Length: 278
Image (cartoon, rainbow, N blue to C red; front, side):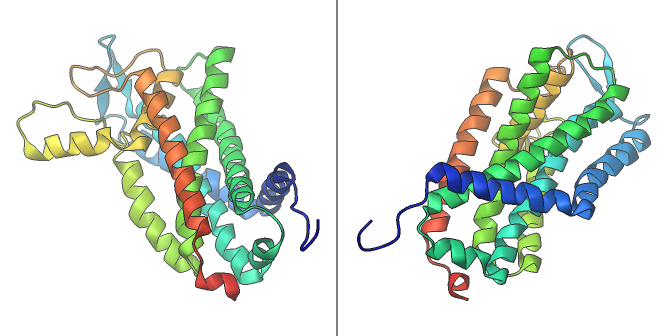
């Protein structure tokens, strides 16, 4: 190519960066243990501790234990932690000089974003599948199609949260600031996702309940938790007592949100950053 170096293949860049994320993550066993151990510990702690004082009605006029109710939320929490851990690599790569090398190389920035997001999403999905082994102690019965659908949902949800983490990490120059922002953004999203308590129905007459309903209803993670719960258990939550989204709506919200967050990450990546020149 005259006048400069030829462009590297988009697919090759994505594969190389994704494989680099996978290799680096699984070489650091403490990150693997920390990402899985924290949600598992919280699931057992809160699930067993609140099991006798908390139960939720289902559509089949039965009661589900908090240990069962809280498991989908713990699974989504695992995906969130992994998304945070993997996108920290954006800041580390900038400090080590690797990111600057990628930026001046003849590669598309879109390929760089896709590679980083794909690598982080695969890591989160794989850890989510490992975490599902704990569901063997619960009353769940999966078919092959249900399990495959659940894995697909985990991958799309992982991609959504990884895109959010990447967008914030791209503008950060320190891991301390990144953790502070992630705790401010993702933790409230998770707490208001129906992971810890169901979404209240409208018509209660209390303003706080009405506001909480709409905030949780428009939270993308609410639809992730609801979809995981529907794929795991046969009985849905009682729609008389709680608001429960339909499967079609949840799938549509997750796909659209992931596409929007990925477009946001691409847009953020195009903006110049002072840390890129260091």
